[in-house]
Amino acid sequence: MTFIGQFPLPGSGVAMAYLFLSDEDGTFDPEGGENAFLIQSGGRVPSFVRGEVRRTGPALWRRGTDWFERQPVELRLDLKAPDEAAVAAFDRQVVFRDAALSGVPMEETDLPDVDCRSYVGGEPLFWQPWIPPEVGASWRFFLQLDGAEGCGEDAFALNFGGGTGYAFVSQDQREGRFCWDCV
Image (cartoon, rainbow, N blue to C red):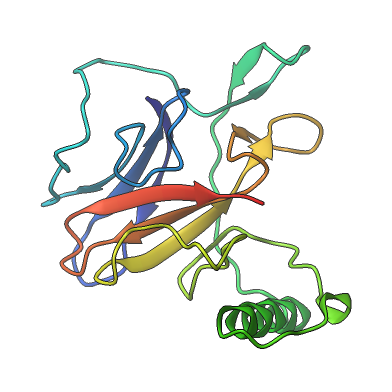
């Protein structure tokens, strides 16, 4: 599996979540064994995660001079609060989603684009809200991470089929799940 990144968990203790994704099909499945969102310290490794001990392994990358060349990248991202326009656009998307899920028709013509689909906290904004990932009601949404092709202005490559990845944490913050959704 490729190491994608590490994310600090909220709370009084010091804990980090580590995201790993394979290059195989099935990374969309939260318990398919092709991804791992592991919690340390004090975390549990889910039974479906298999690995091997290695000093180093594949890491986050972007495309090189051609589509198949992989150039390793290291990024440090700082969180920032969104501006009012971004919050309003996101809230409108949530209203549209909730209306669609409850069977109330709405016009998509007034639906604003959401500029950033990568964020920590809040609630997930699924591409297909009528079939959300099967993680169970006891799992708390932690973050969502937009996919990218790794070329042009994309700082990295994550193949989510043009969609977005979602991380969830168990109530006791000892286990994680990761999946993705696209249109």
